[in-house]
Amino acid sequence: MDDDVMMLKTSDVKTMVDILDTTDTAVVGGRLLHRGNIAGLLKFGYFNGTQRQLGLFPGTCEKLNRTVPNFPACFQCELNLNLFMAKTDSVRATGGWDPELKILEHKDIFIRLKAAGLKLAVCKNVLLDHVPPKMLGDEDLELRGDPGYWEKRRRGFSPYHELLPNRYMVQSIFTRTDQEVDGEGNVLFFHRRAKGHC
Image (cartoon, rainbow, N blue to C red; front, side, top):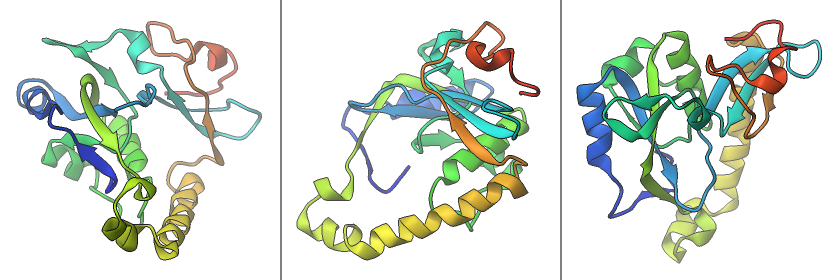
């Protein structure tokens, strides 16, 4: 979980544990209170020109109707926010967390999980709250809301963007929200144009 995501008294952690214990799902995540559907598909292709891109398509997974057996509020996906529970062995099998990444490290994990054929599920009934520094009390603002905190986050983008050509073999990130998908998980608007996708 990100350091500014908070569990609620009603956060259904038991469902997350049950899915990991009783299904072949490797990672299970939730949603943020008062936020839209971020859970989406990850694709590699040529979505906006001639350069190969990493495509992030929030809001698409639920449309596939691939629910987790015995958990109707949970569906299979490929990308979610940084709020999830995972089988330790599964994350380690993908190489674990990259120590160079200080932000957006969850996207790297999700890409490697997909490449390894491991499953991610997202549950609509597992809700958490996002409380950024500006919403916290004076003590927390002192620790995380000062200019140094935001400078650290800004610098954290550099290693992530270096991964694009070096690790993922893409030139940029392409994002579109709430695109239509077919039963095979193809993003329909771009499917005919894509020269390669997974």
